[in-house]
Amino acid sequence: MKIEEILTGILIICSVMLFILLCIYFFAIYRMNRKKHSFNKINNYIQQNERDWYNYLVLNKPLRNHSTTKNELAAIDAIFVSYVTTMNKEEILERASTYAALNMKNYYVEQLNSRDETVRLHVLQRTLILELEFLVPLIERRLKDNRTGSI
Image 1: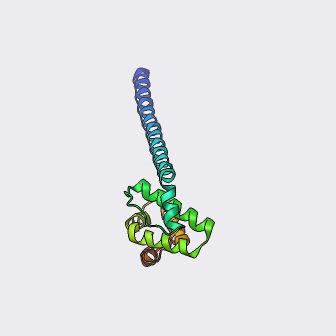
Image 2 (image 1 turned 90 degrees about the vertical axis):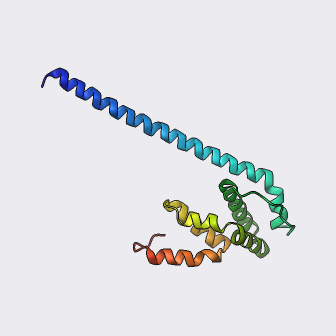
């Protein structure tokens, strides 16, 4: 082999590696922007609807219909945990649990079946805080099916 062929091979390998690194870098930026956008949507929902949720959870007034996108469900989840942990009233816990059982079951089941372990642990935490009874059989079944014991 000539030195020119070796240098050409090294240049091609370095070019491919640089391309792969650039793809990983741009993908990381894309994911970070997507998470930031989702976080902003959640915060906007909380700010725009905090009065409605206060009226529903604390004052026991009827709740206006809300659309339920994934980000809005995450915001509602955050609102419930905030109210239940800070106010520590049984009525608030009951209303939050009832709403979650009726309107957010698919959201929690989807998170429980997530491949991401942190998401599954998040659901376990929510199950304890909000006393989400409907998730207990699913969690038990998942623990039995999974031989390693991790949810």
